[in-house]
Length: 608
Image (cartoon, rainbow, N blue to C red; front, side):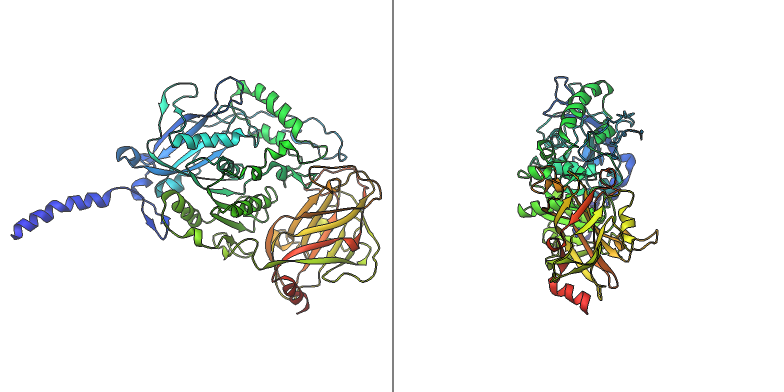
């Protein structure tokens, strides 16, 4: 009898061993773990193909096809294993235009004046097949995901034309996701008929990427495509108007003075050289040129068609936004506006903010849990966790602090009045000065940068109003709002507003949070609406209100919060001839700041 049981045990051992060695995803603490059998890159299956879309933007009478690469564990072939997909799409994978003099708009011009023609550089395409990119592979393939990349329309080996936010840039990733789910066709060549099927996937897709690569996941999600379960956009541009304009004002993204949609179009147009002349004539020199309206800066149909907030109704993907509060390229309002809209729609949402500049993904474990929950269906509780995760000023990006939401639910608007103590300076106070104040004037001069103006003891080129010195830390969270009444000596003027932390830290290695709290820009000609502008009448006062860029910052004790109002901002605006005079009615101008703890917290901070 002993020998009989020994025989059975010996027979069962290989079966148990085989079961244990079977390569498949596994999970711990709600995260997909690295599977040793998926780690060897030599075993990965790497192929490329072209997915057929529903549009023709290069005018050849045939649906455009998007170039796609696939990286998957060999077990999806040898064992019939089906896995979900992490997908990144980009216009940058095949190269960008060189830095050429004259390729940006000349910003040294009067407001509303016709600008000079710009130079249009050509992209020299690069790259090799079948690998479009490796940006996601080493992170996600070992954890049991298939990774795909695609070049966006008119870039790399993808057909079509760039439109910089046009419908084709939403429908292109939709087609790829449709192909992954058997609803669209893929081919081995850009013009052939031999089909490729995605038999190795569950059809569940998550998208991520940074900047333009972070815009595309949102663009795809707004189509409502089935199979796109979750997205993690990092520093995404969610509205080209908000990227290139601000409250009616022509405003450049930080670091790219003079950039506009036509400049970005040239920068990414790396597609088929034989199609570029048609694309340029149709989109860059027609649709874009006639739509961007650098003369007025107004929000029009062109901009509305490139604002993803207008397209969110079909969206159902779980949304995890990420952004830096000091990203002055793609400013954090881009993530904020989409996050709040998705929250109101009842979608699963989470937001991660850090205190640095452009880019900066959430910690990998947070991204992993998001994709694990929505692509593998593992109940790890991410939807029950705090919605907002914010890296505090002295913490590392992998150590965010959780909050119930953003803005902080305990934040309340505190209205501060501008009480003058000298012609261009004064105090920010809860109480309004009980005597009628003289109107304050400033003279525009772009030769004085915002940084320098904040450090001057006094200047005719700006107004500066400050709180008393803080006796204890003050936490701001959310949107500050300026309500201003002003007059201009000319029919058009720039209006720039900075909130700063003073005294200014002059250390060249100082963190931006030591000095800049938030900023905002507006065109007084758009005092009624961003869709409507009119020339200003000399000496006539106009009232307007607008939000500054979202922020969450703890202003330390010993500092003062300063409101600085000036005209042309040498880092962001058009730069007209100096001399325009803005007159501010101090009695009718206020700033509302979002203080955690509200008015009582503010009073305590300045009077303790």
